Each structure stands twice: as C-alpha cells, then as structure tokens.
Length: 144
Length: 165
Image (cartoon, rainbow over all chains, first blue to last red; front, side, top):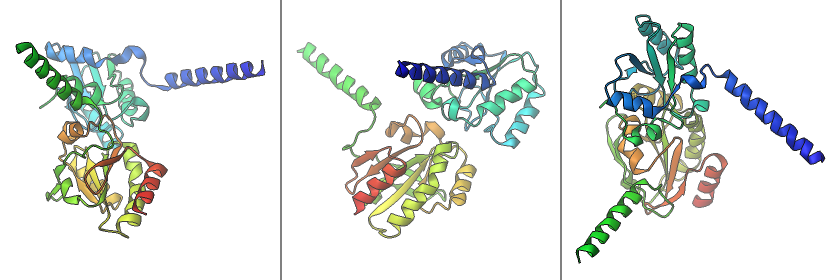
C-alpha cells in the first residue's frame, strides 16, 4: 500500500512538473507549424502572405531570411529592425533547427520578441529533432 | 532468366538503399574525410593511418559540443602530447560561419586538427557518417576501422586510456 502511495505521489509530481514546463514556453501548441505544412506551402507557391525567418545557424529553408542566432543580442536587434517594417497581422514563422526545443538557445528569445512586438500570427516551425532530420532528409525545399 | 536478373537487381538496389540509411557500425572502415583546415590547407583522414583517432563532429551552434571542447583538450594534452605518434583528434565542424568557428578555436585554445567545408548540415560528411544530431564522435584505430561510436565524458576518457595503455 505504501508503495502505491509513493508511486502515486511521484506520478503527480511528474505531471505537475510537465505542466509547469509547458506553461513556461512562450508559444502554445496552436502556434507550432508542422514542417510538412510549410514545405507544401512553399512547393505550391502559397507563401505570399508568409514571412519565414531563421533565427538559428543558417537560412536553409527556401525563401527564408537570415536573422542570425537569436541568442546573441545583436541579432535580436537586427530582427527588431527588420520586423519594424512588417505589418503586425502578417504570418511570421521562425525556425532554428540546431536541436530539440529543450536544448535550443534561440527559439525562446526570438518568439518572445515576436510577442512583444505584437505579431498576432507568430508561428514556430516544429522541428522536433533538428533541421537535418526534419527538413533536409525529407527533401523539403531549400535555398541552394 | 529475366525474372532472376530482375530479382538480383532489385536486391542489389534495396541493399544499396539500406546501406545508405543505416548508421555506421563498429568494425566498418571510417569513411574518408577530405576537407580544408581554417587556413585552407587540405586535410585527409587517411593521412592519420597508424594512429588512434578521435573524430569529433561539432559546431559552435551546438551547446553540448562547445561544452565538451575543454574535455577534449584535457585528453589531447594527456595522450597526444605524451605520444604524438599514437593518438590524434580531428574536429569536424558543421558550422556555417567561419568567423564563429575560428573564434571558438581561439577561445578554447584548440590545437588539434580542425576541418570544415562550412556547409552546415548540407556538408557531405554528415551524410557519409550518417549523423543525425550533434555532438557525435567516432574512434578509429590504426587501420582506419571504427572501434567506438559516440562515447562522451568518462566513457570516452576510459576507452582511450585503456586503448593506449
């Protein structure tokens, strides 16, 4: 019986910790864009109302604009300057792709900036592992 | 007869595809790496035959890789400087920015071989070594055979220490 109580307590703690972690992220699940979805839109030329920004090591995705890694303050300034000219209702999707989100130093500062600047249609590309596995290996469109 | 040829070709094609996608294994030869060093001097992995070689795939945008560099320096100072003919480290960077790469080499006082084509994940070396994520490393023996894959921390230092003993 004691074992079950302990197990139950441990599970409860784990659940609440997971929830706390989820709540800490600046984005919600509706703001995650699936790579397949973006690749389809690029392939069908349906990106006129979409701005794709890389906030990581390289602008690999076709049509994306390079802001530089967002963990560096100068790149955040660059992104701020670039976004000043962009209408706030424009759909903006950012991606890094160095590694999973829990280890990425770039996605949070960049997504927070989009929120601070009032972009209502901000998205984060859901590259679960990295840009190699979740984009390149799938032969999705890239900047040559 | 045509059926047999067809079956043979399909099998050959399938095994080729399979070989392309499966990860490298211990006992296989380490694929050749021919890439430039920061000053442009060409380097070939095959030139290191006869030594135990740690091939460290890294990038300055990979935080755990960067954190590992001081540990590699300890290994390098301990095993390479004591036995220059027996051990070597080759850092293969998947960086895009040469500036970042060179800065990190200076910052961590990396004095082992460093090479990169500055092609990020598009580098053919990532495909040759079937790298899916960083950090990633390989230990290659004197004959160019892979003898360990992705060892880090104490496991890595223990392996090298046992090997060179």
